[in-house]
Amino acid sequence: MLEDFFIRALIAGLGIAIVTGPLGCFVIWRRLSYFGDTLAHSALLGVTLAYTLEFNIAISVFIISSLIALILIDLQKRTNLPGDALLGLLAHSSLAVGLVVIGFLTFIRFDIMGLLFGDILAVTIEDIFIIWTGGPLILIILKLIWKSLFASTVNYELAEAEGLNPDRAKAIFTILMAGIIAISIKMVGLLLITGMLIIPAAMARNISSSPQMMVIYSVIGGLLSVILGLLTSLEFNTASGPSIIAAALFLFVLSLLKIKQSIKLKN
Amino acid sequence: MNSNQNILVKLKQASFRINNKWLVKDVSLQIEKGRIVTLIGPNGSGKSTTAKIALGIYKKIDGKVEKYTNKVGYVPQKISIDWTLPLRVRDFIILTENLKEEAINDALSLTGVIHLKDKNLGDLSGGEFQRVLLARAISKKPELLVLDEPVQGVDFTGEIALYELIKKISDELNCGILLISHDLHTVMSATDHVVCLNGHVCCSGSPLEVAKNNKYKALFGEQASQILSRYEHRHDHIHTNEGKIKKN
Image (cartoon, rainbow over all chains, first blue to last red; front, side, top):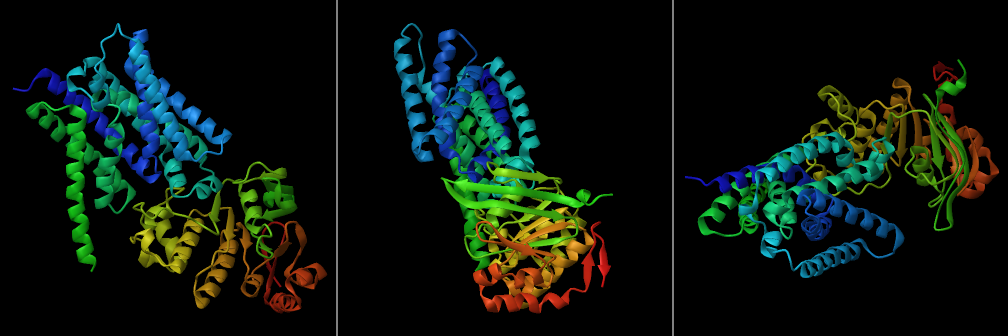
């Protein structure tokens, strides 16, 4: 009935959705969607590196994305350029350099579309292993820094004054972002990873009144998007990434109806 | 037991600058358990800056800050909260420390906003929000409370009640309070020690001493001086070195 590759993709996708749920909430709360994009674009460089050196893609992407994050923090201190300009600079230049490097690697056959938009056929047992060890690890670390990260998201000075060390939490969160991008790139594709982070969380925001609720709905939304998206992908032979994101968008639109209702109730 | 064990924060000639402009210079003061230190001074005189130095928010300073407690409650003067965050009052109270339901209720009752517990933070009025801010700061039973204009936007009767509450908290929790207020009338009735700032420490001492100080008069005018001294008689007790209270 269901093909093996589909089961693998499903297990991998669900593992990713559980992690992108809570991380995505922070991406929205902290306004980091462009930051996510930048890290994701830089992932292409990581992928080419992995191919060149015959190295694991997830680990290579994780290293390159973390490196780009560090460069960004350094540039923020060194220059007077606004944050979004720096993000754009890093995002596009790392994407460009990645593509140029691919041009040189003529001896390797690249599935560019697969890299950009995800490929469920490509999910291996090894990928599942990486997702289901890396994912829970990301969640555990997020749980440990939760109080500090959340408090500093609400107000940096309160968190700092009351001894929660927000700078450390921010640095760790950046590494977690690089981590989720690394483990989800094969599945969702580097152009759409930020969508996987933001759209379920945005949907959750529409129907939640507390942070905990938003995280829970965001996870549920992500899981549903993966199931719906992969089924569509299987049925219509579409790329897995866009199908999952389109499913997430569908759920987001549904959540808008709920807002409309609650506004009506208020009036 | 020496008096040093009562010290919560000590600033020694603390100075802070941004882009070569000194915001405060050579500020020395100390906050002890059970005592209220009030900072007064005109706009831009470095009151909030001094508070942030004491709290450790500003770290690159000249001089020295010695902090002897980690149990801190802070009510900032300006707080920019992203209202798109789904945050209820109860979530905000436990922002920096998890508390039992009872402790949350107690703090909200004390500042008179228990009925707002499940409301969204973004739906509160300015005065209501200010009461929630104060409730949050006291809910964790801190050793050091830093209150930067804690009653701004609160109605007049509420203002008096909240200042009385601050005084009560200082006595009950035996915590040290650093208070910033522009309202000389109400503040002075509760203050043990006044530091008058104008970029540097202009003068300091008991409210009466400061009121009599010529530098203070020069800064605030003769009338303000009368306000300050008028409230002096309300002190019906003194604080000993151990942080205990002795009725006069």
